[in-house]
Every structure is written in structure tokens, then in C-alpha cells.
Length: 390
Ligand SMILES: Cc1ncc(COP(=O)(O)O)c(C=O)c1O
Image (cartoon, rainbow, N blue to C red):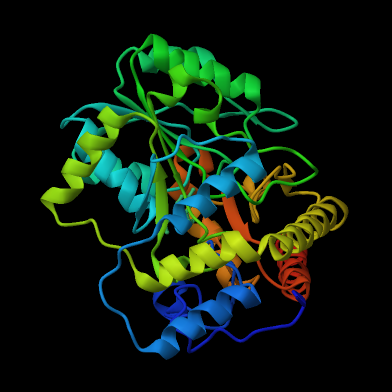
């Protein structure tokens, strides 16, 4: 796979590339916002999809056991988690699964903990479902973001659910076994349900290991619903397919009965084909990709350190997302976005959408060709040099 090969995604119904004018007020920018990648998926996935498309048979789906087998094998091989057989089912997306879990397991006005700054739809689905956000702010140290356990303990006394993001978007943290055990214990002590979004688990760098929180103990697993997908890892997010792992039959029954009320039990046939093929045939491709993304990360972090020292970045341990601290420029979120679009010609995610802790930050998507990363950072350097020269 040549990850360096540039691909023009305009005209391919890509959210990241369409409507830039509407979103950023300009088409003349490098889009590095929505978290998908500018790479073609693994060849085996493309072939499997082509074969299925050519059959011309796209009726309702009933998955045979092989898809679950491939998920068990993946979890076992990549993360050492021996998932209990019969505890996986497919879904149409991680965020919608979070929303259903909120509905199925909490009541209006219940408090739900998230660890901010965090992937912005978490707060949105909590609020849109009439629940309250309880924000356990991560603490930024000189090295990285850390969990404020004292604050978490306090919040846990009142909350009903924790939505964990591990690996964490946008900070790139991979929580350690010790951190996850402490989170698990707090949730056990306070009878909190854990919804663990592990969608970025395949993008872990520097030989670090992702640990599914439910794999730590039976006690934790009993109160955890894990959400994952092949969608980020193999760049097939448009197929709207994810999966749920729930080793507690009681929780599974409650969750599924909620889905049934809305007839939400069907899967997308192409999503199923892509997931199976990715997990069965594309592990080498993924390993190559992770190396490429790690090099992108290293390049970007070094560049910022050497050439734009007024900015700060903590090297992400995972994800292809770079969380950049622009606070020394002293710009409000609106002015920062305007500066990035108009002066640096970049479409990034404004940090403020991830929570108040994101004020003065922006998230840059490095899931793209190295040349694009270089071009984007050169633009950024030029814009900031101009800003500082004023
Ligand atoms: C942490 C996290 N969860 C979930 C999603 C989206 O998942 P889905 O498209 O399956 O809803 C993203 C996408 O950026 C993400 O970063």
C-alpha cells in the first residue's frame, strides 16, 4: 500500500471535503477536521465489497457466525481479551449506540460523566436526551493529560453512567492498566455503568497496548458495554457498521429491548462484508498504516517544536488526531478559527467544541498523505510568523 499517493476526495460524497464553504466560509483550505482518513481501504476490503456489489443481492441481513468469530479473534489477538462467546452484536454506529445506551439505562436529568475535553458528540447526545453532563476535566501536565481521580470520585457519587473514551479523542491518551483499574473500582463502588468507546483502539503507537476496560475483571465487565468498529481502522465509516460487546446478559436484554422498540436490529450488508474482510484479511495493512500514522505524528510534533515553538503539542499515544495548544496566541475560539481558515488555509476542529477545556486549542487530523501534513504545517508556520511579526 502506498500511503503517500495523493487522492482527490472531492466529489466522492465526503463529509470532510464537501460543503467547506458552508462550514468554514472558504473552499480554499486543506480539510483536516472530520476523523476519517484520506487513504483507500485495504485491497481485500475493496475486493470483498466489489464481489458483493456484483452479485446484485442486497436483501435483509442475517449474519452467520463467522462475523462474530472474526471479532472474537480480533479482540483476542490485538488486545488479549477473550470475549465471552455470544456477547457481541452488530450496530449502526458507536455514537448512536451511546445514545441508545443513555436511553435504555438512565432517566431524564440523570448525570453522566465524560472526561473533557472529549469527542464532542458525547456531550451532545447526553444533552439531547435530557440528561446532564458531569464533566470530569482531564488535567494537563507538562507531559500529558491525566485523570483527576478525586474529582471523578466525587462525581461518581451522583452519576449513573460514565462514557469512557479510550484511546482518548482528542488528547491521544491511552489509559494504563492502573488508571483503568481505578476507574473500574470507582464505578463498582458507586454502581455506575461504563460505556467504553474504544473505536480508536487500533491506532496505538510506540508499542503501547490498548487495554479494553472490560477485559480487566469480571466485576468490571459486568457493568460495561464496549463499543468498537472497523470503521476508523479501515476507513469504512460511511458503511455505518459497528459492534457492541456486552458480557452481562441482563444488560444486553435491556439494551436490546430498547432497540426493538424502534426496530433497530438490522445491519448494513456492505458494512458486514467490510468488517469481516478487514478483520480476517487486513491486519498487515493496518500494521503498515499505523507505522505511517506514527511517522506523521512524529513529523508534525517535531516540526511544531522546531519551527512553531509558540504552539504546544503533547505527543499523542494513539489516534491520528493532533491536539494543538494555540493559547499563547491569545485568540478567542472564533478568532482562532478565522485565523486558521483565512491565514493558514486550514480546516481544523475548533477545540472549544470538545468542552471548555478546549478553549484556545484546535484538532488536526493527520490521517492523510505526508505531503499534505507538510503543506499544512508550512501554511501554519507562515501564518503564525506573520501574526507574530505584527
Ligand atoms: C471517539 C469516537 N467515537 C465515535 C466516533 C464515531 O463513531 P460512529 O461513526 O460509529 O458513530 C468517533 C469519530 O470520530 C470518535 O472519534
